[in-house]
Image (tube, rainbow, N blue to C red; front, side, top):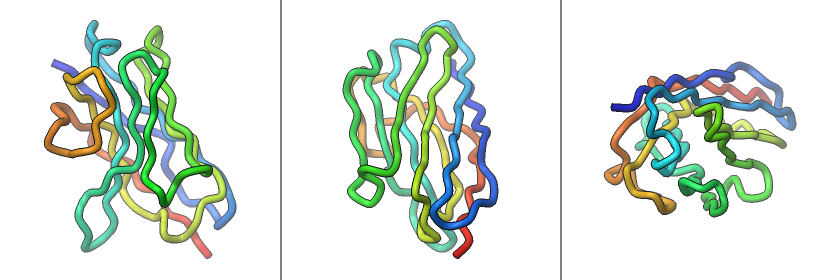
Amino acid sequence: QVQLVESGGGLVQAGGSLRLSCAASGRTFSSYSMGWFRQSLGKEREFVAAIDWTGSRTRYTDAVKGRFTISRDNAKNTEYLQMNSLKPEDTAVYYCAASRFATVQYDTRTYDYWGQGTQVTVSS
């Protein structure tokens, strides 16, 4: 069992930055690949970024490439999402997730555990 708790969301002006953190409980954090998803009002949850269990492979949705960076610290059982050059269209609830598959995962259906979400609001 893995429990995930996100933090770091908030209100920021366009062009600003935020860093989201996802703290995981459990001794097997390092065996899971991790991801970030987001959901804005009236839309389906969408993939943002993912990282494999080693932290050596990452993937991003095209909309955030070059602006967001996903990383993890297995010693601290924590995943991060550094978000720079934020845009109003990045406004959403951001969720971290853990997958029992070790490789990078893009599909919500391959994730086993989810956090409760943290709100990110970018004003224009």
